[in-house]
Length: 235
Length: 120
View 1 (tube, each protein chain N blue to C red):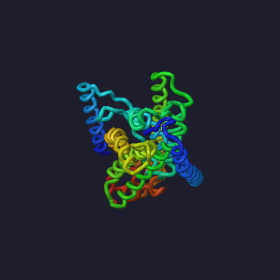
View 2: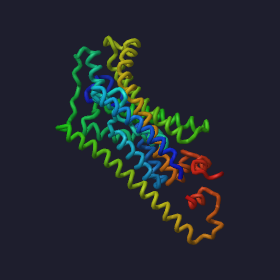
View 3: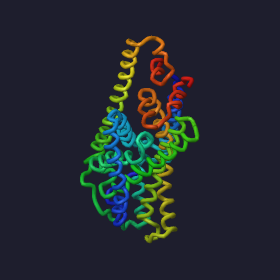
View 4: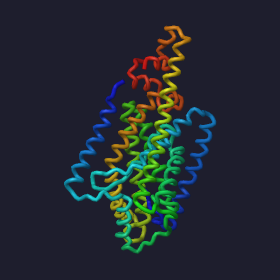
């Protein structure tokens, strides 16, 4: 989903920075506050960040003969919310921009917006809605993280289509025509990878629930009654 | 502990792996990066006139170095994951053992979330 260095012209790269920077700053503020109040969440924060590191480094082959990588941001979004996920996503994107020439510094704002903000936001909203509807916990985690991953790539397609509308002038038709072309690459390549990401995320959550469910309950990520049910203990 | 979820996840991965093996041996799919393909579309839309406004300040000098750095990224992440899951797991076991010592049996059987941990 990385838009490569230099591939967003003025005013687009500035625009995405203008949108992303407030979200990152708010995320840093929230993260500091959370760590100050509950120091015991630090390891969980590290786990969520590390998961993004691992998943976004794996370029996987997809069914259409292209490669792309999962984002891994869904776990952070579910546990800590989209703002803190934006901070974690930025760290990973910065590493890749500086050391791998993957993405770039001028396009960092746009990449943070898609992978750090909208993807996690979608995952977070689906998770909340799914838990409210009393669906199976792991199924909800799967749906939330898979659609969060997929949304990231749809936003990337939209960002590129805005900067490169067909016919060179930004009209709705030009935008849609370009969006279709970019989405055909990104959204199709990403669909199977999103399914894998959702499955692996659900599995990781199983282990978090096993070893550290008390923190999840305390942070209101999950209710104590759900934890009991997952462990097969009659309430 | 039930292993149902593990089996489902493994099955999903195996399905995609089998698809990959089948397709890579029967077609000449390139498995290039989607990011690079997007660059192709940009060239197509702009008629090849677009010049990037900036160049990466540093690029891995070869594919080998690039895979080294990608591998490093995964290794750092995996190391942290393993460390903390090990830490939590050991902590839980250790706390439960200590918890059993000073406690009478009825306390240990409390049907609360705390008590439930003993039975795992």
